View 1 (cartoon, one colour):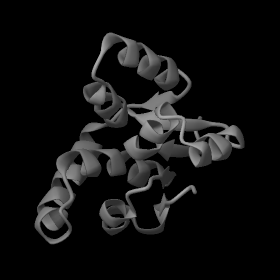
View 2 (cartoon, one colour):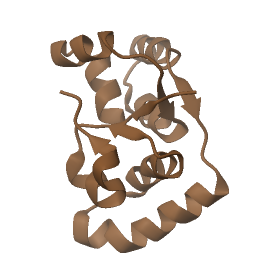
View 3 (cartoon, rainbow, N blue to C red):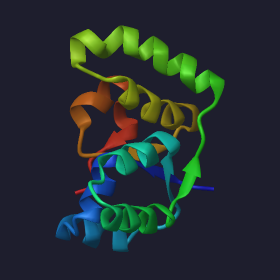
Length: 125
């Protein structure tokens, strides 16, 4: 079982070999990702070579699947926060698993995730 999930922003930093991300990640274990974060990373690649690198990174993490309750929670939050905080559907879906499981979401996007899950959203570096 995972003890925290990573947002797409952290995965992108790891893919780009961002030193702060690599140093932080070297000290962590039992991290997971939501299926939505997995999809966002794959959607963002621009070549087969980068897709291969992304898949290699993503395989390191346990994938947490969303439930129907997660989808309902995310839909409610999208209605509540999309206009006031510019939160998008993927943000709500990613946050839904953290909310359900009570797990920290490591992200560099506190602006969007703090309204959704409060202190469960944390900047790792």
